[in-house]
Image (tube, rainbow, N blue to C red):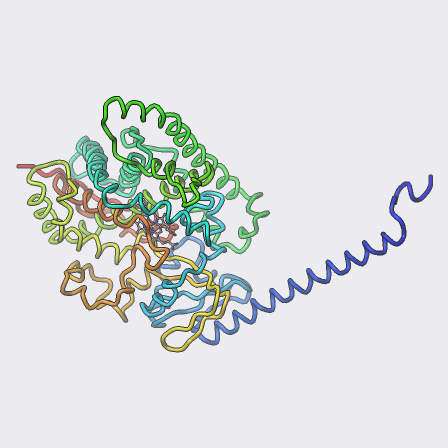
Length: 517
Ligand code: HEM
């Protein structure tokens, strides 16, 4: 057989191909080397400008001190943030390092820019939340933020207060079936309750998720959040290939499929129902409240283009996660703070009784009168911010007010938990003191000292929604129940699992019904 039967190309072509391969390989080697060089240089500059806490391992960096169970952030990292007033460097491996900032001036310098979110942490969320508002960047984020903002106008939010009341009352009816003095994991109940209200507000889904008491969707969201944080702290699981083959990766895929199917089923049902509802509404001339899905389905940009099916699903997944898990965290820790401080609990209860006058439904007009409740919610969000840390990649260098510079391309973590506990900003930061949020005590505060909902162009789009739900739920709960800590269990320990949760065994409180006059 002739040689050319196997190699049907001529000598010149072969030569050209060989050269092309050599050039290609050389370009790759140069690019990789330059990339590594830039990373090493950037890390060196960062470490020259900002303090690096001691104890960093040559390979594992500070991971050895932080551990992978999430307690490290609240102990070691908090310790460092008390020693270093503005910022410190954390090494997550031989090459990966970031700067955690937590002084209001520093936070302001980063947050007032529109840098993209850090690819490292947010890429782990992408298979789950796709390119939704939380994870997207650039023109896509800008367009979708503009399309979704009308969904948070107060006229849209007004009727949701009734829905928050409904969901809270379902939960309280379930509590009434328990023995007085029962110890319950409030995080579990708040997750079910906020999921129930989110399903109503976002998708007009009125389900029995609270009465069934367990929910596969919530279990999957828990799993996804835990697995994402675990992956972020592991040197090995960062690789997509290794993760895909690992047992964690398989669990992540399974949970992702479950939450995606859940959202897709609801969207399909709603799309089918939309036509029918239009007909019904025209027939009865009765307009139901607008839910987020209505906004998503009807949103059009200036060219008349709407969101694609994939974009709608990504936004639904984002709202279902951001909208229920964060609020459940904020609410659980608020109840915990009030249980630990019976005097403040009683003051909130008195206010709720005065405002509600025996009603079991909160209205929009009641909310501004809940002044003390608002102060307690804010103080709880200070001590236990539902989102303890957020992440950015600085696209151009940032120079802070004291002249120190973070080089272009650095990863920066904005430590909201650190910021809210800094002894350099807050007097006795570990003390629960709602009077910090009285109008007179708030007026001179640095505008970047208290940021549970972040700030700047990428602040929380749902912050008014969340505050309304928190106030409504706290008022209704305290009107019907008194709360005390369960001292037979260890003190709840806050851990960073995308949102701030309580480490095992959970956040247990004892509940006792109150006689209503
Ligand atoms: C106590 C409750 C809540 C807290 C503490 C909270 C906090 C935050 C924070 C800190 C961010 C910035 C995240 C980042 O930059 O990576 C954020 C973003 C976001 N939040 Fe919330 N959130 C809460 C409730 C909600 C609710 C109820 C919704 C929806 C109904 C929501 C939707 C979003 C969305 C879509 C973003 C991304 C915004 C963007 O990048 O344009 N959040 N939230």
